[in-house]
Image 1 (cartoon, helix red, strand yellow):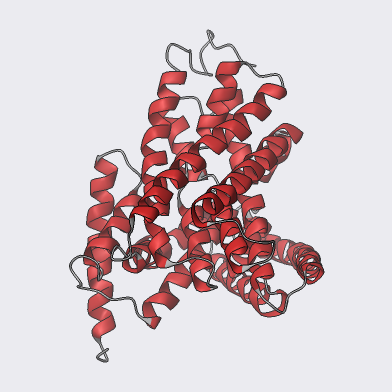
Image 2 (tube, one colour; image 1 turned 60 degrees about the vertical axis):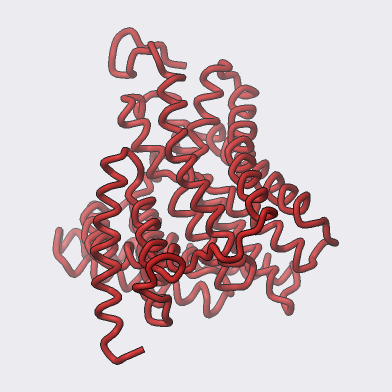
Length: 399
């Protein structure tokens, strides 16, 4: 690559991602879908204007770290704790059923293998991709329907947040077991040590930031220091504990989410993420996607992958809500509300690609899942909520 070729590549990625993101938004789809499609079009499989390089890979890595840091910052710990064990139980079953369903689906198509084998780990990873719900897409859908503040909306939101946390923990374990020199107990010990490390750093960092925030409110030094904490936590997670860097970034966001200026930090982080690093990350997914390796077997897998990912969320979360005493209709709302997949599914896929647990050709299946779930969820929720009063009206009938 010529010395300054990366500048041209960045310009093409930024402009195309923005244009297709706006088109997707106009079509009532998440902008992330447009940014991925932009990457597909400008990448080697269509126009060939931009090729994946080491530089773009590093930029994409920064992008995913910033996205997860922002997700942690936007987590409302108080609302999360208020929901109690119901949301936790919905989230746990909502992770377990897709995890098992995804692994079984992969092995039904590509063959069953013994525990711990390469093919077995790939199957488990396919299930891991299915675990996480997209909080952003779910929130936007409920907000547009006017039911975000209702009891079911709160349950879905809290469950989705816990769901993502559990999904990241599952990802950490799966990546840890991929290492041939790693024993199961090593993964457990490293994860436990990282949790202790996070608590220690978290307490010290929180009170240090709280002091700075009180003395210098709404100053740019706060998000700068927050970004430094994000990077050091991501580094420590990978370097010293063998845990995905995105886990460290997410924990850094959780540490700061209760600060008075947490929204200010998130706003400043969003500028860098929205303008450059985010589009590069999502476009890079498209750049890495391959169509030349598509076979009838892969097409069958893609259809099965999308169907399994959607139905297992409805079954896992919906059935749990029903067992907790919710009506059949409300239970369906919970199940359907948890179907959406987005950034976290892409992030998990990206990590799987980087450690050899997934081939680039399978990005096609993940992209199809995001598109189908993003389109079908609002439609199904609208049908389920039809005729019901919104939570802020007297006619509403809360659970």
